[in-house]
Length: 264
Image (tube, rainbow, N blue to C red):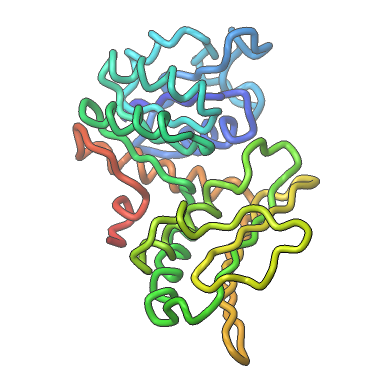
């Protein structure tokens, strides 16, 4: 399978390139970066001390040489990539977060033509955590107060993280609710007592934290905490490759990592 990597000169892009080079069944075919990047024209493996023969480019028509694009960039960049993927019939693994409703609608529309795995987090462990949250939410119901905490590095531009929102969505869905109707993102001043059935979110940004997420189920006399901590981005890369392989069996349609891992 021929793999293209978007954001090839970024931290996640480099990790993905290294993972693809280490996979016996995948080939690095295309490396993309934004126009004006100092990496344009350089070998994609240079930052990790490898020679790949694949030069980083900002030309999206290069995607014609790939089967699957893996994209962990920004929403505006990913939306441009989606158009090019549909044009060249290239499947897509989207790890980008921060899409608004129109962006999500564009992904859904594109999935009528190409296979897309779109998930708030590509980590296998995080997706197992989502499943555990569904079990806890089903058993504890709304008699327990739920709070979601997340921490990331200081360069992350969206908040709460896509993973934190995914945790909230897993719980809300189990309760038969829409997250938008029960989420609380802002607490300041005299807020009054906590309203039952709501899900609160809190965020830390600082240093080089890769990612930490905890869901608290707070009940009478006890508290249950379900936590996932990332020590490295390697788990995101490994999950992304599993998603790419999954798309080998799907010509079109929108999927998430729960589909990839058979957790539904």
